[in-house]
Length: 149
Image (tube, rainbow, N blue to C red; front, top):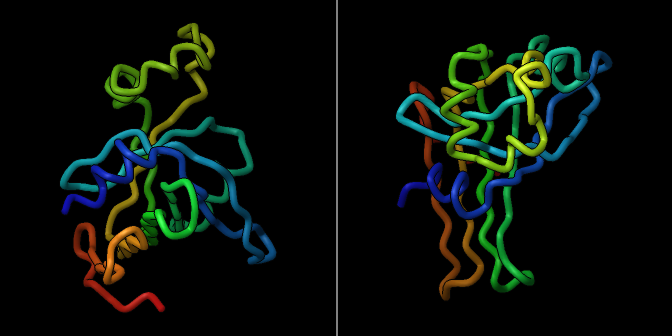
């Protein structure tokens, strides 16, 4: 199973968690835009509080859920290191996620955007729609699979 592909193509919108300057948790809804062997990609605008938290901490956790109710639900969670990789991948991400052209219709509106990559991460797959319930751990990059309980 390609868990990152499922997260990007089937779930897409995730809840990401970081910590603020007081080490308190903060969440926000973020679309995951692409994946490859190096990690999972998303974007945000420089100057946002989310951007500042990512830069300060270097770690993120996320969960994405798909299903109409609890017993049809699939959840993918991931936690790991995050790094800014800049604006170079923006064109590719916009082509894969064409709705972004509506949110940021001009080159000027895209100037503040930057791309981040989640790498060296541990993840968990949880599928309540199957009997018995399916659960699997996975990792990205140099991270070793760990039990995330």
